[in-house]
Image 1 (cartoon, rainbow, N blue to C red):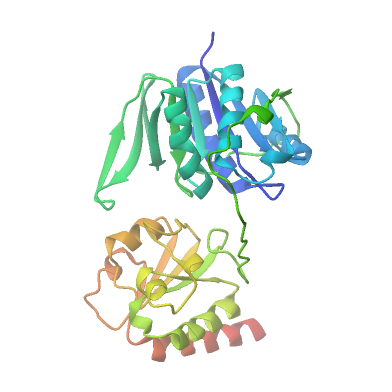
Image 2: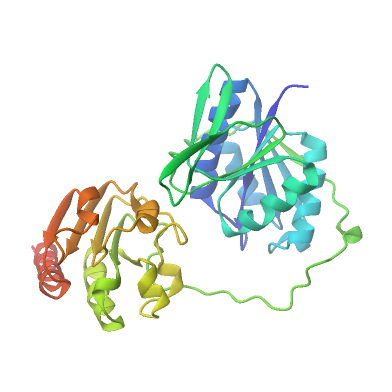
Length: 328
């Protein structure tokens, strides 16, 4: 049987996480090309017809669909059972997922179940004569390690590490329903409640411009000044870890190795020293603008543009300048 690559299309509240899927699919396409493999998408969820139709625009050989009300919201026991059934049908040699909260929980369970190799948080591939090394940062991103693995192998792909796969206008590939028997699943993890936090404004993972603050902002009131700048230029507000720990800004604003990985067109790093853990989350930004009162701050080493001074001086002036530009 020909080798096959399987890419999970993650669905949340009936909607496909398009950036996560298209970036992960690009990695899958590179693996499939190197091994002359087929490439398939897998959709787990309920009432996912629109998602399945969208999948067919990405040039996959087939879209496998597990549709059941119990898959509407991620549940580890039901998802593992559905994934296991799909893998028996497809027999993939490589399985890819975005490095999301769902995948962080699901991928190790699936790897144990399938007796597969697991490499998480991959940021690149090194392909030579069909041999593939899966690359991931280790030791606080000081080193890029390469992992070779015999199939089956499960890979999670860090956000913004690959360019998005190209969506075509025409559709191709077949749709294959996966037969399920979820009534027989033993539930080891009962769900008692589900809390959804909706963040106001632009999400940092979707933003083209981010205004991020660090410990140097000094207070929650200081982040209000950053929010004014962000609102003026249509940006999202982000933060390094210290402001999160101090309660100055909500946890979903955290950018870094233990937060969200971003790669906007423009990244304002304000009052951020430039610790390696934070750089791991934003170093792929196309343009980095640093503002810090310490001229020796490490952030200036990676910045494209920098200004030495306090944010109290610089941020209001920037905000006013952008407002005048918008009016003009």
